[in-house]
Image (tube, rainbow, N blue to C red; front, side, top):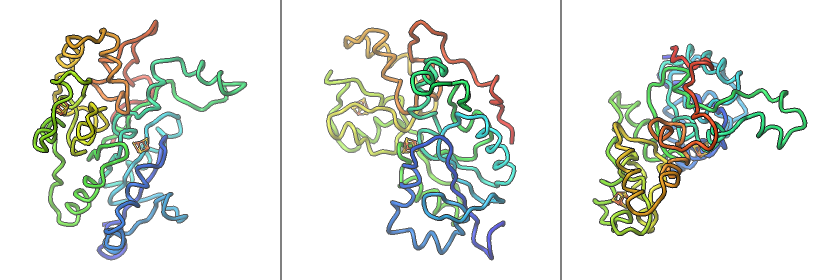
Length: 275
Ligand code: SF4
Ligand code: SF4
């Protein structure tokens, strides 16, 4: 145990992100004092100006990898961390910023900066798991506070956290919401998306956007075919997967390409899963 006394030493670090997942941790208002008593919060940019570079018993990583120094930093942090947990859609599945993978980063840069060659960016934005070994993933955009609570509680109790892998459809049916996909009202990614949000979009008559990313062995091609059966073109059907979790396979593979090569695997960018 690296922390003071018996308290596990915890860090929160950010990569390319909006800080919303850190704010979700701070949103655990009723539990924050108890968390601060039971864990040593050694590094947490949104909560304290104290900095700590390790070792960590638990490190929460927010954000996706989009710059070379982030790859280096990740490997250094991984080497100093016992349990590395990625939080939110950016860290687990690339986030919205990974949509730039479908274009040329130099072209994007040129539209904003006079000299894009000075931009220290990687060609592709990738989830953390494409670079280092990840011990747990907490999903959502922002990360689910229920999953945070469950994970921290399990950590203290020394048990395995319960992080469901069922489809959003199961939560949706348990809550008795009418199916927007069956009624033909709109498309919905619920059948292929991991549960955890309580089917909040179907609760308001909207289709699931896939914020929690793909569940285990999702049948994406069957859902694309269903979208086409209800009137979408193949292009429109595939674009339904170009959201918060577009960088996670097999969502990534379903997204159509416009006059460009499909984003390649991460091997050329130090994308090995080193420990
Ligand atoms: S997952 Fe969503 S809330 Fe969290 S850092 Fe990324 S964009 Fe922000
Ligand atoms: S509305 Fe979406 S999540 Fe709910 S049952 Fe239908 S397909 Fe599944």
